[in-house]
Length: 467
View: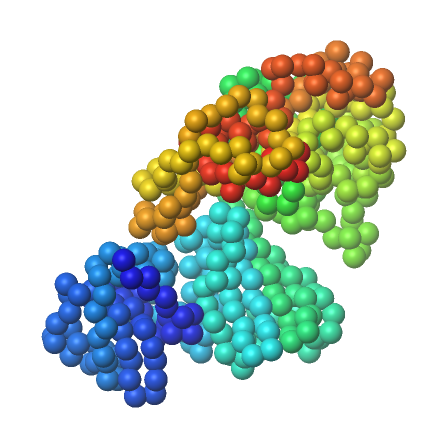
């Protein structure tokens, strides 16, 4: 099958509607000639005449196989990309930014990156945790686009030397805007926020039954701390909001401080962090204690002051939920000690420590089975059991030739039972869980879903080597 490559700068010479209707893709573009790949089974003079009429230029067909066209169409012209039938997204159009945001939302994009280099610029979408290039933009159009974004975000369009942060509010969602001066111009990252959390359910996130039971048991306690750890983009906030949704009723006063507010949930009092005017996690927490709260959610424990305030809040009868950056559930305890929290206070207040990661699921339509080879795995990893075969990504029309379809979370759950609390006081937590054959780390969980055929080795490799 011939591999069809469509250059980004040529992609928007035809719309997705025309590409899918006539089964064509741009091969090369010149001022007076447009050469198109065409399905050899659909090539006809009538199609050629119609396209020349639509596009207003001379067209030459280059026939290729139907399978090659099918694959290329699913990669370059996803049908859901078309936000306005018959109109391609063109930077020169006045509604380009609106259409771009609508497209990003329809593709479940979490971030949009606008990047400029010496001779070119581009727009990339982060979808399922991976960055995908979507558009090439002319330099003169890029500068105009930057100004439009700045105006929408109420930022200073004349300031090009310093980083700026702003926010855009639309009817469907909110957007956090971050602008960073780089060597050749300003780079912009837009984070799509403001998603409705009313449908997030803990039971659908990826907890195994025993893990979910332990987590729910800790949530039922009237006071204490629940900590979720993991890197940026690992789904910590989603887990926290699923927990808040469970706790949210007319009998509880729930307050949160976040940076940024990523979800909205009716019945919860949400506060946006503003460090430039002194509204930090620690200062907000002090104010929260005078607001008669039952449940407090801190977006993140970043420093010793916030950690000690959270401990104090839990000791005075509040349930505190927060996130922290560590590699494992056990590592959270060490991190709190490093922040200056005494071990005996951690043992008394910590209800549960959870670590999580997001892993892409293999597409069930095209995944391919391969033979197990220990040489492909990290050298230091000790396998809990052996497997004969596992699956790798291939790519098809259903998954747009990525090999993956959707993501799931994997969890390492550490409930703080009496024996665990005793070990925390004596700084011997690792010894207990090294002896516990039933305890599974994130790397063990990652290996489990590999053995079950749910994900690929390349997707979990970083988890295996970092735990």
